[in-house]
Length: 305
Image (cartoon, rainbow, N blue to C red; front, side, top):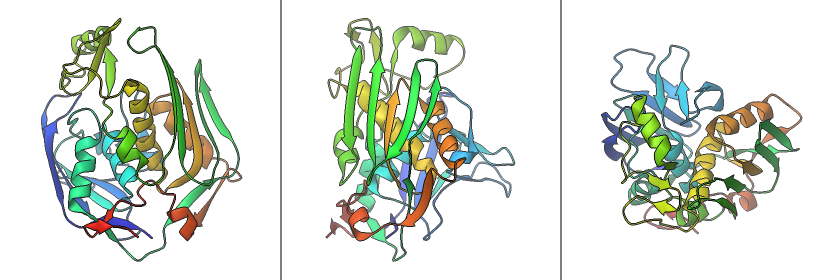
């Protein structure tokens, strides 16, 4: 069945790209509402932005959604990943600025807030989206693919010339809290040359060594080093989890990414939903629910049965 939060969760931080302070509150929402952002700094009626794949606007550096009136919110991928990974299907996210706070560059603080608030079963059947055949998009050497599966699996390959990153590959079945345990604390990463270039162009103004892992050749420049030896590929999987959550319902699919990013994953969802023979919506069976990313996490302050 569908789940929402038991109480509000408050976050404060800065936006990665603009560097401006921002406050965000994640609130419970009714069944079948999905995830919706509300720009409370915009004093007009069209400040609601549903978190959907068809409202994504092109961006290489992050995921941005905008409604038909032009109200937008950016860098939503980490909070979306946390909600999907914890099994929250309905929430209203009130935010007083144009981008989600970057926090420590991962989903960890969002996950901690969700688990501290607790989850509530809503008594309504949970729809899912089952992928029926392989769908693939390519751009140069980058590939993103969805294939049939009875539960969500993610595998990712990255390949960087920097010695500290290099080639990394990881595959995970995203069931029973795997996201929380394996991916949620993995931070966004970049090369120092990219940081210098972005700052020179007025981008990543809120970026620091504390909210991103910065690499230079064989060195990890961020204090404390890596949280995982393969933290970069884990973060790419975290991003994919958040971007796939924009499908609007849990995916029964195997996602594979090779040098893919936000734009590629959205392009893949658009290709999926453009082909009526490639997917179907179905109500999750008890067996399917047991394999969902948030299954087994805390409900009403006690472990779910």
